Image (spheres, one colour):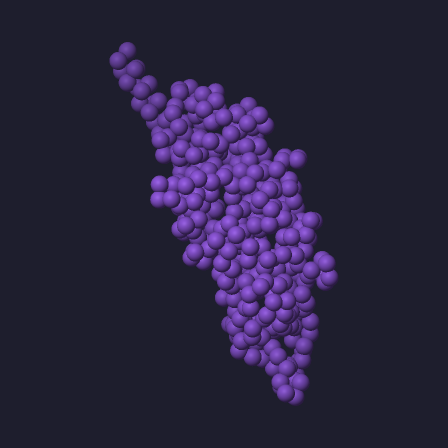
Length: 373
């Protein structure tokens, strides 16, 4: 009997360890996914030093009533919102994709260092993405005194100014012909969709792609393609020869319910759909998620993330690991807004749980960035 009891305890212990390992692996996989994007979030926005400057720099995409509402602190359901900043948080206890669901603004508190901490359970990012098939940089072009088109080393683009650039192969320095980007419509539709925007690795301000066209360069026997970029921010931007154009992407990440009765969810991401003002398809990435919680320290430009995962149920009662943050216990669940303690008592306690935590310095957000004005 003693041997049987010892064997049972050993098997039970090994099962618990295995389940915790599964839960940990689930959390680490989510962290790895976010890490690949958060490191680039805000790249190309470095000259914009407060929230209103970001919103103004993207204003065709933000301020009109049928645009994706960057400047709003509320989500409009399927419309692209929450994207007021390169890194933004919103909060919802229901599925953010549900019909008529309006995630709330981030919540906030002051920590013991008197830093303002924003918190939420939905992370939204703006980040640049490189097309690996396009191995080129851009070079400004201008007219010389003979009205010939020539290349120059740098240009300044003033507010509402437009500048032409040619594509040059990064490796061979040869000029490139052919269309490469999605050109914006003109007039009231200018800058309407996210694919009409680009960020340059060094310029520090997002620009609208307003045209692509063939041009004849002085001392060149063949036409090459030029791209026209427009600056609508209030800040003059300098672009140097050799800068790289990158696509601008928008994405949000959250935990989505599989079944309200089990409270186990998937980590899901959505990108802004092409030629659309709405979020694209929901893409489940990792199962076994019980809760997610984000914080932004607006004084240090730091993002912290905690994810509570399950490795399964083993017939025992468990406590949530002590490393789960206290503010994270203010999260509510389900359409009825079930409180943390109720969900823990009724559901979570039967799961073998693990808390994974990661922290990132938001390197592309300028020091002293004003998150609220």
